Image (cartoon, rainbow, N blue to C red; front, top):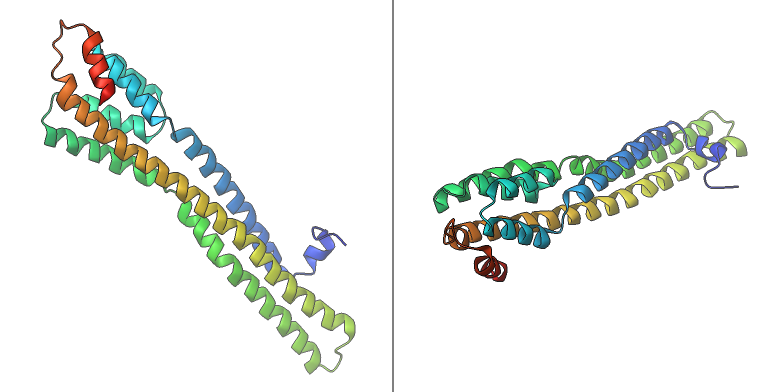
Length: 223
C-alpha cells in the first residue's frame, strides 16, 4: 500500500486533515518567501560598483533611477544615501538607518509563521496519537475490542505521529534555509550602506563638476 494512498490517510483520523491544512499553508508561505527573497537579493558588489561609476560622472539622477528600478533593500538603502548626498555624515547615516529599519522587517515577514507551523505540527500529531489511544481504550471499556477496532485506534495513533513529523522536519529545514537567506541580505545591506556613505563623503564630494570621470572613477573603484 502506498504511503500516499488516500485510504491510509483517512485512517489517521481528523487530525490528519489539520496537518494537511498546515502543510499546504506552510508550502505556500515557503514558496512566497523563496521567490521574494530571491528577487530581493542582488549582486551588491556589482551594483555598488555601477553606482560609483555613475556618480563619478556626476549623474546622481541617473544613479537614483537605477536604484528605483532595482528591487530589494540594498537599492532602497543606497537610494536613501543618494537622496541625502549633500547632508552631513550624521544626517546621511540617520536616513540610511531609517531606510534599513523600514526594509529589513519585510524580509522576515511570515518566517515566524513557518516556524510556528514547524513547532505546532508535532503537537497536532501528538494530539491525534492521544485520540487514537482514547479510541482504543474506549473499545476495551465497551467489551468489544475486536481486532478491527484495535487496529483503527492504532492506525490513527501511528499515522498522526508520522504525519506531524513529516510536516515538522521539512518546515524546520525551510525556516533555517530562509533565515539564512535573510541574514545574507542583511549583511549585503549593511555593507552597501557603509560603502556608499564612505564613497559619498570622500570621493564624491572631492570631485568637482568640471572634472573628468577617468581619474576619480578609478579611485572610487579602489575603495
